[in-house]
Image 1: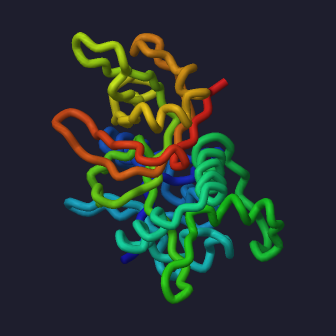
Image 2: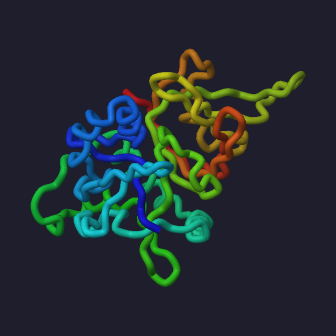
Length: 264
């Protein structure tokens, strides 16, 4: 399966979800082409140029085969994407420090700080730089390297392979809803409501049991409980989504698979 990209790195040193290009393209195709084509690159290593595939039904970004070697040597996108079986195996054998490092690296690279495109020989790269480009990479059966499925929360195609556990990330407005059954006092479940940071339209919610809540209470207790007070947070979490009528929903089964940080 050829790799496709849900976001892109633009020459102003920032990552954008693919929807930014397509929304602009639908309004003014020629202006979108002039602005972006030839100026967008792999969102991880910022080196391999992205090509736009614009068919009758499929719209996506790709790196053509002749440009694949232009990825940084340690970029996860040099590899193929892990399939469902390989992905589930990874999460079954989860290591706390490993997943924490991956999620924090994802948050820093994809959401918070974007490095300038490196110039010169990509082999001359220090360990610190290396760690920012391979955090999606895993080793599967047969000692083969692949990358973990992942997706921006601002993606227009959250439905894609929805039954596969993915790392989701985004800078979103959030608030915490506490569900208490009628005539009862104890909280039955917590719902982390994730909203578009500008429009405040709901993207998805995360169901959190009281048991899991205990492990995250220091952070969750600081999150507003009313939609009108929703605050922007950097979020990165690994879950399997479900789609309902008007939103996407998921259940947090493990406190280790989520990282969040309030925007200052």
